[in-house]
Image (cartoon, rainbow, N blue to C red; front, side, top):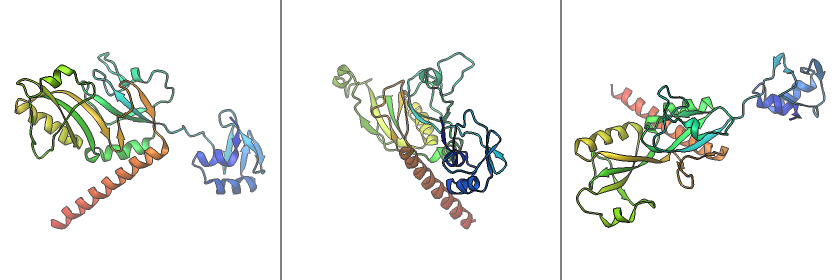
Amino acid sequence: MQERLQKIIARAGIASRRHAEKLILSGQVRVNGRVVTELGTKADPATDRIEAAGRVVREEERKVWLLLNKPPGVVSTLADPEGRRTLRHCLRGFRARVYPVGRLDYAASGLVFLTNDGDLADEMLRAWDHLPQTYFFKVKGRLATRGGISLKPVRLPDASRSARSNRGKRGTNFWYEATLHDSRRDALRKLLFAEEHPVEKMKRVALGPFTVEGLPEGLYRELSEREVEALRRILKKEDNAEARSAQRDAEKR
């Protein structure tokens, strides 16, 4: 698709749009070997060879951010040597190459973030242990607060009528909600298992600012730039908090 040269140059990260206009006016831009000096000139980055200030302009891959509601029994990767179902099965028909950020257990269900935005993926991974995540746990028996973690009983819309009628009876399984960071999730599971309340099912229903609401299991949706900016604000906040904590620790030494 043909677009104005200054827009193509700016999107490729070579110069701002205003500076790209100056490059065009000063004769520093070529299209298929021909010098271009008119601001209204258009080109197709997919078929035309564009050079700006001596550099070849390569079309930047469009950044994509996906939120996927992973079903249980799916590996949180795009390939599996054991031949198990992967996230690729849920992305059939989606052409852009994206990669999952973080992890979610094979038997668990819920939100997985995928992107081709390497900078954002790095930011998320650095803050992963501090990124708020909300889980629903289905456990054996009734619980109270455990290990300083508040567990709130929840009733899922798809809970069977028989399960609700058996509430309070011995051996009944209950759903609980907890918002915690990644490392505390594993600690909670070990604690519940040690106290004979094994986790039988787990759903990640919120990841940072995103929730599973309105996203059916096995499907995905593309996030808007506004939604991604909300995530960046949380990551920046967590990064600043971690830096302040590290500074306080250093001052104590």
